[in-house]
Image (cartoon, rainbow, N blue to C red; front, side, top):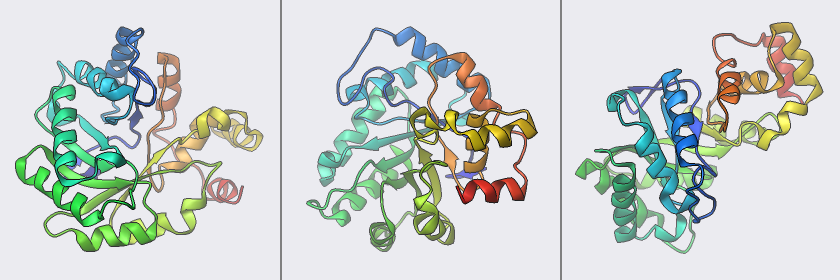
Length: 265
């Protein structure tokens, strides 16, 4: 699969709550999380999703440490600017600070984390396009944008396209299939699915378990396999065993019948 002219894995990896929570860093498990991230990359997942808000930027620092020793061109890094930083100069500053924490030469994809109705979207888009011109960012996108806002963002771009919209999407929350996913598909915008395991709740889904038995797969693997048809899911894992389970969602496909059964859940 291609994103920003780079090959990316069908599944990415999320870093929310790695190195802290909402703007608050936690350094107590740094070596563990760096090891997990390296394990993820070594096992073929090359899309890593983070944000300036995660641990107050510490998640970005962990990603920066983990990617050392890998060919940067083979890794795809997404990070996001928080909605209170969407003024022109604040966007530029946030991106430069993210780049510093990631300790790399560029950000593959830079997203508006959440919309902010009090700041003109045009001002934010201008700044993001400037970041591409400077070489700080390769591609731009959005997160948590509905059809109306995304349509506006598309019309406001002058030089570069909106390439992705990161949204909540799981087998437990398929509302996006009715509007935003078809809109993105029509406009060649990739869907990146956060909370793809519904914060762990899919593992207890009896229907997914039943379908999984046909394929020798777990409910989690079935749930992710369903999502990769129309999105790039970005699950998070805190153990190597969980990473292995995530990897087991690749290399096979649900039958049309089973896909439809899950779609109608």
